[in-house]
Image (cartoon, rainbow over all chains, first blue to last red; front, side, top):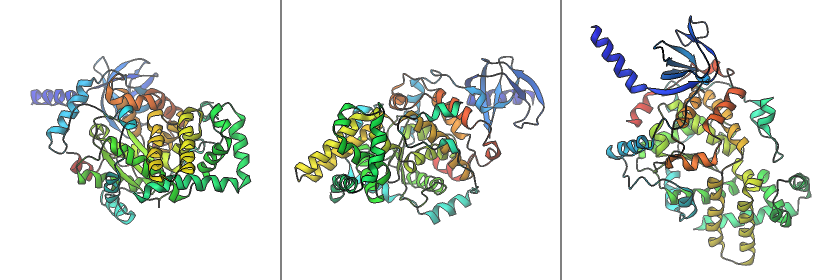
Length: 172
Length: 294
């Protein structure tokens, strides 16, 4: 029983291991809620293993081995943790599913966009897949999605004058 | 073929409209007052005025013509992924999110293009594409909804048209002017239309205004929340992008045209922070995502 527990634990950490860095000192909680018990604290710059996410929370494992929940926005991932071999693995994965034919790892580069010949037939094909609103609403409901009122952020709307720095205003 | 004529016609119409409506001169004054305009655009101030007018004044038909040309060019670079189920699914989710926007009745069309690159694109008129590279990496419908919400915001707030007249894309502005000139000096409208799609596609290579990317992130989260998803799924998408090696060719175009994932997360941290946490326990994933994603 104990051995099974450990092998399950190992399996899940292998499947979800994703490194991150904590950007500010924060409490570590035992559940993804603000009123959950604080089981420790995490200092800025701590390297953590991201294990799962729920709502605005992220389950992390500290270098000490202690696990718990912190806010998602307290963590940044760092460049270079996923190599091109992972990207390649994705291509192979998709190719092997038989859904798509991968002609090479050549991507959609700036040059390819600049040198492309317009493909009108493909635009027509894209339009042919368009949904209608009654259908979109019905399928959303069938998948338990409920529309709610959420006010827009007033300062997320750009002013009309080019060059005005909304970002600076927001930072104030 | 007929549609290709629409673009130069639309621009010519925009010029005519601006000449007969001096009220737009106010906007032109604003436009010319800063250091935001290139010398070239200042010299061609009449055409510049036409472009400025076009930001607010494009008719739905003109927007559709612009978007159609741009999409034809982009789809010429990478066609749709050959999977009708995925294409229909992305349209269902995309339209549901777009129905929560300021333009629920626009002719919204979504698609997944067949390239391993990680990116997404939008064009005037309601055209939105994400790449197979991005589709393969997302882990939930809430993540997809947040990405589409970001692109939907670029469309509803007309960020691409705006970028054409900004200092960052002087060349595209000049290209647009030369298309108008071409159209006026010859009858080869189709050729000009083709060129138009190319010139406007330059926006995908040059990128939009950095602020507009931040705006699209924040409003994309709002649209996702309105559609019943956890809006913080955008945070996990950006963390995913942040973990990709920046020197990887699959993200070269995305990273050269957007603020870094870290900068975008910092902006969300400052602008949104905890403010949308009341919606964070909404839907993360759906049955249909798991069915289509296999």
